[in-house]
Image (cartoon, rainbow, N blue to C red; front, side):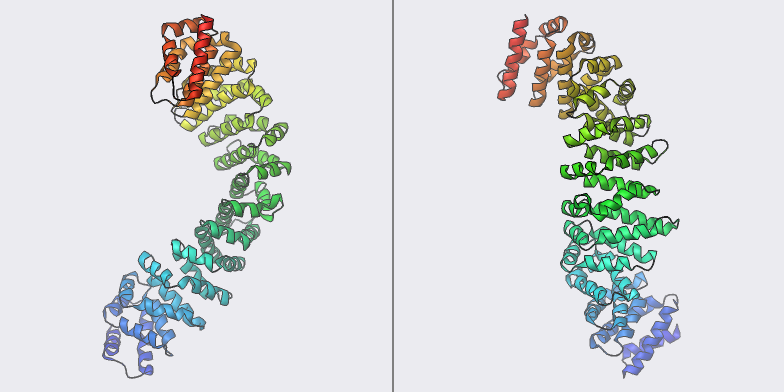
Length: 556
């Protein structure tokens, strides 16, 4: 290290001319590139860093060499803070305005290394306006791969900063990234660009700019070019790119542009993913369809264009030992598609409910949960579908099991809600008898005491419908499980929801047709509970309570 010590001492004393300084810089560069142990630290503490900064400010023929020395020096994490303290970053930033590509390269590397993983310094860079300059450099020198790479890495490090995203939205980074994505020479470059896109794509304004600039198309082209191979890097790129397209669809306006009323190239590509042999593309395809299906117009259009059979084929492919994530995503897509009433009819005609019944044998809670939710959406407002499914013994048997799923509250809740929906939407005696035989009434009564108001209401309405249609087959079970005392507790609950009390009173009106249940009401003095509610501040509830009192009086 003697020669290094001598050079550092000479630099501190002062050099007479550029030639002498160039010789010293050559020595520093050689030592650093040889990675001599402790060399970077020795340079950092020697006191020459401010001299390097001053040299940069003079903009001489040695500027490039100084930038290169600093870039090599900053490879060592331990010297980055001394570089900042010596003012090297503030001296380097103006050099980004240069038109010399070599100087830009070394300056970019030096700044990037010094500021790596340093949030305050990165914030400062954004404040100094480096974002527009980085984008401009990529636009000016799109074919200079090393320089573009430095700019991309810098954007990657800065993209998490909110003000950086705002700055990027103002300078048209989307088009620049699209160009670079299309010409990415290798997996490493692809991954850097994909990482930048992924981080920036969380911003709704940038989402829209990405779509307008053709980012989804560039991603899809990349996926198409990489399909069929087995290289791990390519498969990783496919995964990241397809996930990116799905995330871009989370913005309403960007999603609509990609959909293009069902004729958009991205929508067409997504359909092909559903039929791909690549599980990741199948998953992304199903998630994308679920995103497209966020509004009724798109749902109706997609069903018209025949998307449902593609999803059903995908589901059937994964029924036995298939991918749980794909099944979950495909069911989410079907559920969303089934929301518009016109689609329900069309999907029932396509035998959707019959084809997804194969998933009843699934032992995976996420799939069970989505299956139940999809079936519930299918029968919503569909009397015929509810009547058919409500008499399906195999379905009811499985639903009863799931109503008792102790380890998965979501499955248990959805199973109970489907049970209530079958009665509410069919209003069929055959369904009520089938549910009673299967042991579903007990589950509905338990559901009526749920902590979720919507579930309580659905259960109470289903029980009221069942009681009104066939009280005789229900009354024994009602007495065994203590329905009337449960209803009284609801009516007397000082903090109970008004809508729950309203539905509970409606159920009472149905129960008075049973002599034994009416006697139980009298013994519990349910009339007193109803009388209190008849003076309730909510006029609708008070009226309902008065109606129940009148019915009770007439029956007595």
